[in-house]
Length: 317
Image (cartoon, rainbow, N blue to C red; front, side):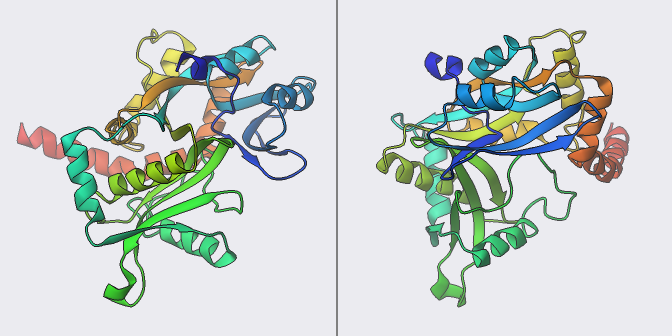
């Protein structure tokens, strides 16, 4: 696994696709710096070649998220500041990640009366997935932007767990995973959706089914995606420490810990990931990221709940 940490592999904000030329999606953070929110890279392009051709020769400042250690230190050697901001959960398809009795029981319960299906891409299914987002646990909240890909495209794979159609006359989705590729044998999770009030165990059952499909198809690894603000070893007075400390204080708005516990139940291999910024991350850029991602709207919406539960807690004491 050490090789995966050190290897120059795609950040999880990048993915592979079957086209001739790369596609870059950039937004302005200030007059001199852009955020490379997503990049789509043809399979035949080596990542180092892509970086040299598209990033190293530009005079503009640039931010890239989700870089593993190998890519981060490659960028560090080319004028970037690197900041450890979280961890990525990776499943090795040759391992048994489902040994725990409690997990097996959740999978058994989640599969009861349900069907697993891979949904072929179509404009109809693209629309249905967008609609499904608003039926999910956080569907009535401000939606985060640019931190992950949430639009079903032809190069994605979409897996769902649903009710048997014969029971209701039409199928009802309970959970969905949208995947893309780091490499042909390396899948990564772009989006995880769980229907509000979905039965217990459906997401665990869905992961188990996807894992077995990928393993059968010859994949080596599957990334369940990243969890931010899980870096604890750095001092508060470093820039890295400040980012993670503040992020953990915002747990009431973005429950990173719940996400970590969900992914950790599958006993993944955790590797660090980094923000990589050229030349430096500034306070103004951090505020701009907070705004363009809609995180500020999420914070504002959740503050009344925070105050309410704070008052209840005080009264209970």
